[in-house]
Image (cartoon, rainbow, N blue to C red):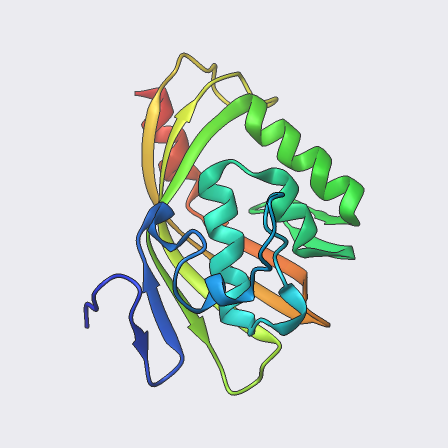
Length: 177
């Protein structure tokens, strides 16, 4: 069932569209007032609110905010790859992604569960391939669009695990065309 942007489903599902979520809805209440950049109070957010804020930061290209939302021992399970462990490895991955890709996530649906430590999301990636990534086709500014999903574990107000899946062969076909 489609819901208007920013609405909540009584069964723990919220829908967002791209950047429209950024600091909107209940997540906006979690910010402190100051003249400086607002501090995100992840310690009082639900798992779904934290995931929504994480995706809003992603769509703003705010990797510092993304880093602030993950634990020091984050386990980042990369699609068809290994597990990167720790905030430093996650920061290096983000820097690599910013160099090689420009992406926005749209049609984001975040799912929660009765277990307050888990959340998941489904979304569509709209991207541009900027610089050749090792072992992949040559980058020539190709645009791509593909469905993806991520799974999250949250503890003590921080994301402790991110696992993302998408169809790599679909992406390769799009950038090789």
